[in-house]
Length: 242
Image (cartoon, rainbow, N blue to C red; front, top):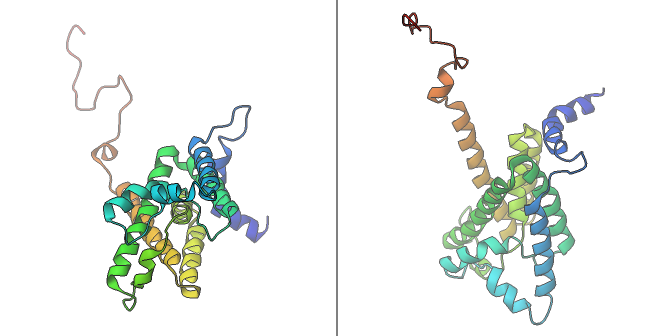
């Protein structure tokens, strides 16, 4: 076995084993969230490209930093599945199918939704903070970005990819995704790139919280459990007549 093969097996072996487990067999495990996300994204793409549907999709799922905060928070969940108008829809569908599908197999449907929403919400809130800081601040944004329509699954995809890779020990992969997002901002500084970094910071904080929780043993981990029916060592002899 070559050095690259050994590295790939160490890097992606646990993740591959987790994903491959539910797939073989006559009834592979379903991925309802991934299927629903792909279908909803395709439907919204169809509707927003119709004269009667563009305004409807914008009113329900288009987030702008200039909007009231309550309205932005209300639209954020659906905005995740509204494809960006300036990007091909097949890219969004492929991202959701691949990354959401792997995440749902590895984490379960509700964890996938929570992490996807956390990453998307971090980007949405960062846009408001960055505009308040101004274009000349290190992490600031120009005021014109307040009018940019902020939709699409990219922040959620980045967050899920990093969390799943970290969870299964693919640390080089998680690092590569992070470096790619930093390079994106350096090469083309825009709202989407900085929102990806905000999503990475939010998911990175979640990874640290999970790691800290694992490292802190609870009372049940400090005591060795005795098999059922076996008396404790300090319990003394059984009572007479028992």
